[in-house]
Image (cartoon, rainbow, N blue to C red; front, top):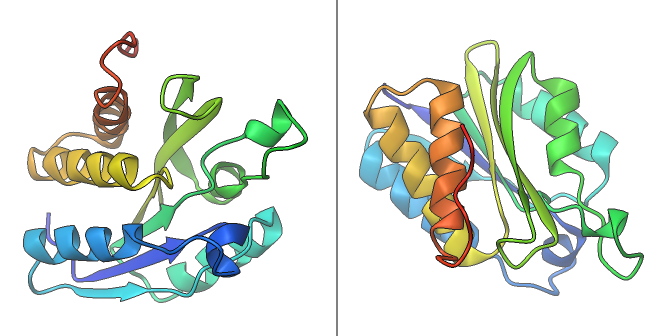
Length: 177
C-alpha cells in the first residue's frame, strides 16, 4: 500500500499546554518517511483531551482525504478509575467517528491502568491511535507499518500493534485473538 498524505495529531492537555514535550511526533514522522519517502507528512498542532474537539479535528482532517491519520496519546482511561488521573478521549472520539474499527484493550500491563488501541477507516482514510509514552508509540507504529507492508487486514494490524506494546512488558501475558 502506498501512502501519499499522512497527518499526525497529538492529543492531550499536557501536550497542548506544553507541560510535556512531544517526542512521539518526530518518531512517527521519521518512520512514515522511511516507509513512504514520497509521502507528505504533516504534524497537526496538539488538541485538548475533549471528545468533541477531537471528533471535529479528525472530521476536518479527513475532508482533505489523507491516506492515514495517526492520533498520539489519549488512549488511556485512568480517570475512570481515579479522579487524580487525567481524562483521555481519543479512543472514544475515534469510535464515535469511524465507520469501521477494531480495538484491543490493555489492562494494567503497560504502565497505565488501562489503554485502548484502535484502528479503523472512514472512507478511504485509515485511522490509528498510539499510546503517548514514547517507547509504546514507537513500537505500536512500527507494528502498524509492518502489518501494512505484509498485507494484513486492519483487525490483524490492530492485534500486532497491541502485541508490540505488550512485548515491552515481558512479564505480562499476551493478548487473546
